[in-house]
Each structure stands twice: as C-alpha cells, then as structure tokens.
Length: 292
Image 1 (cartoon, rainbow, N blue to C red):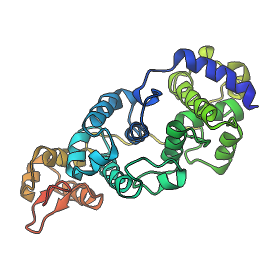
Image 2 (cartoon, rainbow, N blue to C red):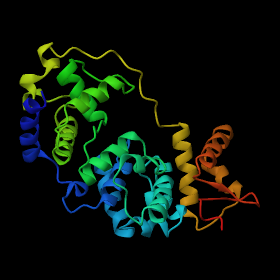
Image 3 (tube, rainbow, N blue to C red):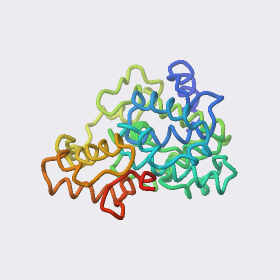
C-alpha cells in the first residue's frame, strides 16, 4: 500500500513544497526543535519571523541556556501560548547539561525534555535525524483519515489504530520515511485542508476513500471558544505588562490592565502556576529570572 501512495506524494512535494528554513538540508537539529515547538497551535506565517529572530539570538541550545527564562518570554513576544518559551528554555538547559549541548536524536531522550510530547519527539527525531517514526500532526491525521478510512476528519483524540496505520505506511528507510511524513504533512496543509480541500489538485485523489464515498460530511463538532474577553486574552494582557518591565513591578500595576478583578486574579494565578510569573518575597511580580 505504501508504494502506491509514496511516489505521488513525493513527486507532488518536490514540486509544491514551501521553502521553509527548518526544512533546509543545512538546518540544525536545534532549528528543527525550535520550529516544532513554535508551530504548536501557531500558523507558519507567524512562526517564520519568530523562528529567524530566535535562531539569530540563540543559534544553539547553550546560548539560550545562558540566558534567563525572562529573556525567552520577552523574545517569544506575542507568538501565543508563552509557556512554550519557558519550556524551551528549560529544554536548552537540559540539553546543555546532559547532552553535551547537542539536541538528542532518540525519541526517548527527546521525551525527557520539558514540554516535548510524543508528536514533537517523533518529528524532531524524524526530520532532524532521519529516524523512522510516524509523525502524526493534525494535517497528517486528516489526510490519512480521508485517504484510507473515508472519514472527513479524524476523531478529536488520537487512537492506537491511527498510530498503527501511520506506522504501517512508513517506508523502511528512515530518511525516506521522513520525506514521506513531511510530504503528507504539506499535502494536508496546502491541499487536503479541513474546510476547503482542493481534491482536483491532490496527487492521491484516485486512491482516496473519502472521495469514493462522495465526500461525506464530518459530524458537527464543538465551536472553538472565543478569544475576546477570555482568560487567555487576560493572561496575555498581564504578561505584556511584565514583558515591558525590566524587573519586578508592584502587584497593583496590573490592576488597570483588566477590569474584571476576579478574572484578573484567576489569570494571574494561572500564570504563576505555569511558571510564567514569579511572586517575589515583597509581593511584587516578575517574569521568571527577573526576580533576582
């Protein structure tokens, strides 16, 4: 089955793939790791400038490890989900202290890094080191759901059957498996999209079970929560104040930032629990590493 899918995907990818810096043959494993962390729940268009700026400032893990978590949060700026910056900093410290400053190649070692889950570990091992692992992001899951099982969208939670299917389609050679995975990922990002798939442009359309079934619709899902007025927006507003400061600030500096005092207190508590804000002995607040 793999061979029937492999050549069309690789041919399409060679012609249509986006020129992304972390896909460059000269990209370092650190570049790949940073990109995978940044790309979590964040579109490529926003990651591109952030990735370039991050690598320009910290071209290797040891350089980031020598900085503070506050430096990482400030550099992260408004990329979203800033806990990723703190975890990436913690990962750089572990890489520097336990792996000789080099990003580890094995999935097991990668999984030991803070904030690195099964998907990111498999992606880095595959794309940076040519290891044979199934790389199942949302795009790959959607392509395989349509291509093989005829479902419009994969189930919300990844299943063991999905992983087994993805692994069964991998070429035996690790480098070739990595090219297959990134090709399917790109196909899902550019052609087999969630809302407006361009089936007439798909190299696998003649083999697609979903097309054969007449493109059945997916069951209705839950609407995504809004951002305006959310705790997430409140946390971002509080964090923006601390990013602009050059050290601890009195707690009441945050009061004008958000009108709802209960939501403000709840959001601040979440930032502290996530390790993004530190409460100093005198009650002032700071980014981690800014408190002295």
